[in-house]
Length: 132
Picture 1 (cartoon, rainbow, N blue to C red):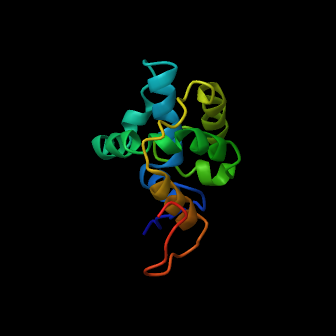
Picture 2: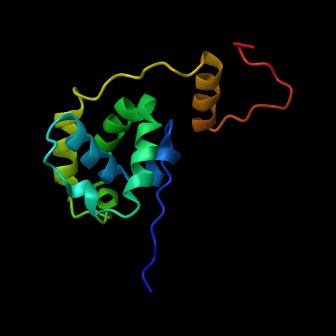
């Protein structure tokens, strides 16, 4: 029986990236921002769901590209869309300057809480944040 590998990304929005797969994310960015004929991202399951997650996480994309560039190649090679780690990183280098910056659609309080959660900080019930 094949064992499913679960990757725990310890950076802001890492749980969302884990849900769509780092290699799929780079492949879709490459398709969207650089070469619309690239289609490896279509080889994954649940493509519609992945696109919804992609579209709802744009504030993280710039950071995710940087994180992928320093990821372990063995981890990146576990993808199911047929792209090796070195090609994933080459595509990430190409799209990094093309990925739009965050839209800053989140309220400052939500962004503070998001970053705190990613850092493992738990907010106490009833505690006020800097923006409260």
